[in-house]
Image (cartoon, rainbow, N blue to C red; front, side, top):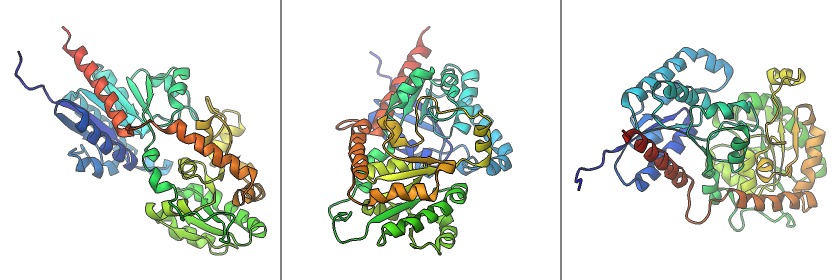
Length: 404
């Protein structure tokens, strides 16, 4: 009988931005609760992971940059951090590496770890959008990712078709925040009542999106006001763009109420009857909140040029840019790309969504079906499912290492 305590499990987590830090912190908590032995956590993370006991190899702000110009200006430091992370992983020789989102950084780390220390298993938490952009990445990932934890329910099938790594749907973070998105009794006034219909306008959270969409959204509001004179418009804005948005919407015929912060944003979701949104994760938030919508997007000049030259890589396995449509396998939410996103088209689509209509009912009914697609089942959580698979992969890796 061996009375020696089992060697602590060593888990190395690599994140590249705040959203990954949040997932990483939840995973650490779930791993600690599930693991039969002590776990030593190492890696690169932010404040939330630090609160869970991870001392980051370097500040996450070094690599948490967005936009081509920002990335180029910091590229030497980012490259240095990639190699520094790889060196640290190889030297510490953990039982498993978990890379979380931010594929431009984390996948570069994983590829180099696989070359230098192929015995260390790698789990990827959050799939790159191979279903929408560069589908060839799925097959290439198989060379350095042992298991992929997907947060969208259709992604396991996509990776199987594209030759990607073994993939398991573990749930989306939003399904654990349903109470914050859905209205309590009295929060969303009935459309048949005397109150004004509430429209959310969500032009995006990046300067480039605001530049391409906000003017057309405003023009759509001018057209819509003629059809719905008492409309109330609420515009959630990220804090660093609030002043710019306030200036650019000051002369709208329906002046929007601008709100900032997650609490005010979700409160607006719970009141809203319909929405006009830029394509992105916000469309999934709206669907879970039960808010019918029209969705628009304009590619920047570079990608539009590639598309015009017929070299744009098309969507790999889906026919929509709207997440609820992809999950449902049905284009329930109207979407408008580039020149199709005209103010006239947007206003005409929104008008029936602001009253009791077949168009509104079709989306509301579809969003109820979305729940069944995304839920994990009673007593199961996203972090818990992710932790279960990480522990399984780590145990398999340990068993392989221990064989003579």
